Image (cartoon, rainbow, N blue to C red; front, side, top):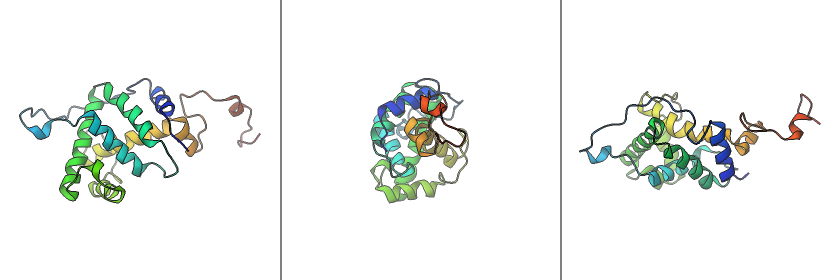
Length: 182
């Protein structure tokens, strides 16, 4: 199955616009003299989110880079608290990756990327925008990507939701019986 820019636009529309719902986030550090507090560039955030999607999305999907790029660019363009949270979570993920693997997360191959997420605890953490490091990475990186995927028509099809909430259905959807049979 191929993800497209159209899927990304549909996912954004399902969230209620380009930015979707935003949540209060005020943890972004204000150490303007500290070079490490500078948020990562949008290009770097995009690369990191694509690298993450490559390991959290099902392997039968193609077009991941185009889909994630379109979705994340729109989310970051809002330049709100949620976008700041995404940027900081990517910085946290890179900091962890540099500590344990001597490379930024996006530069790692698939297995070390998965190890980095697991080592951070993002694979089992509850999502919480104001929580621990693992909870914030889970919320702003992993769950952001999963929200994008399963809000799209292609992603919804993967889990048996022909018409994800917010997407119009085709006439075939309404002509089927309760068991999904014609």
